[in-house]
Amino acid sequence: MMIRTALLAWTMMMVHVSAQTPPPPPPPEEGGAGGDGGSSIDLSKIPIPEADRQIEEEVLTPEERRLTPIQVAVVPVGFIPPPIIEIGKDGMPREKYRHPLAYPPAVYHVKTGKGTVRVLGSQNQVGPFTRVPMMSTLSLSYERPPDPEGDEDADEGEVDLVKIDDFSIPGSATHLVVVLWKEPSAKRWTSPRSTLIDVSPGRLKANSVVMVNASGGELAMHRGDVLFKVKPDHKGPLELGMNAKGEMPLILAAPAGNGWSQLVNQVIAPRKDEKAFIVAWRVPPSPAQPTGVAFSCVRKRLTKAEPFEEKQRP
Image (cartoon, rainbow, N blue to C red; front, side):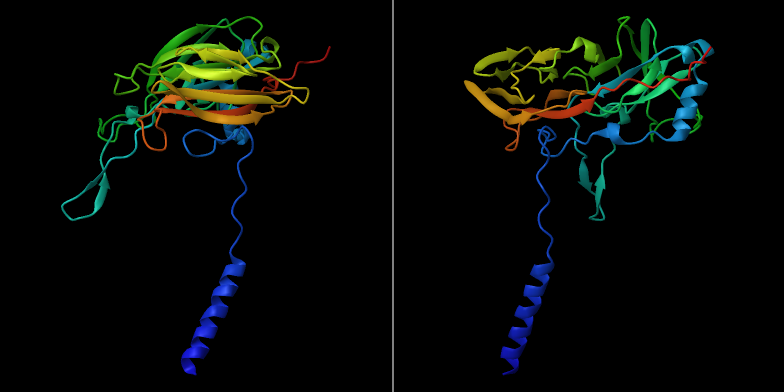
C-alpha cells in the first residue's frame, strides 16, 4: 500500500512539473536566420550611449559639424576559430592562448579633422551604422587589440591604430559599407584586404539585395526560375525577383561534388527603408556544413543620418 501511494504521489508531481514546462521558443523571423546554426542579431537596434555621442562631437571640426553626415558600417568577414581546450597536469581543462589578431578586430576608426570616430565592426554581418562627416576620402584604421602576453610597460590608455586603406567617396553617397577579409593563407588579421560598397538607397533598386561572397568559390542563386552564378569576389548589389507584395525568394546554393547543395530557401520581404545584406564565407567542412560555406542574412534600415548640429535659422 505504501509503495502504491508513493508511486501515485510521484506521478502527480511529474504531471505538475510537465504542466509548468514553458513552450518552445518561436521560430526565427524570415530573413533573420544565419547559416552558422544561430540567429543574426540586428546590432543597429542597440542604442548609442550619450557619452559616445559626445565623444563623436569632440573629434569634429566646426566645418565638419556643419556638413551632412554619412553612415558607415564595417564588416569583417571570415571563419572564427574555436577556442583550443587543453587538459592540464592537474586534470582541469584550460583554454590555450591565441594571439588577439587570430580574430578580426572589433573596433575601427575613421579619421577626422581633429581625431577619429570609432566604428564597431560586426563579424560576418552588417552591424550598426555610424555617422561620420561627409568627406572626399574615407581613411580607415583598426584598433590593435591588447596582447595579454605583450609589453607590460605599454601605456594602457594609448590606442594603437593600424591603417587599413583610404577610400574615395562618391559625392552623393549616404550609406557606405567597408568589407574586410583576409587571405586563407594568412594566420592573423594583421593586414586585412578591403573594399568599399556604396549602399545608398538612391543607388539601389527596390528588388536588389547586397551580396558579399567571401566563400572563395562560386555560389548559385535563383532569380525566379533562372539559375545564375555569383562570382567568388562579388561584393555589391544583386537583383532578385519580386512580387507585388514586395516579397523576394532567396535561394542560395554552394558547390557540392558535381552538383549544388542548397544553403537557404526562404522568402524575404524588406520594408521600403530596408535592404537585405547577405554574407557568405568559408568554414571548415563539417557534417552540419558539408559545403564549407556559412552565410548570414539580415535586414537593415537605411535611414537618413541626423545632422551633427542644427542649422541656425536666418
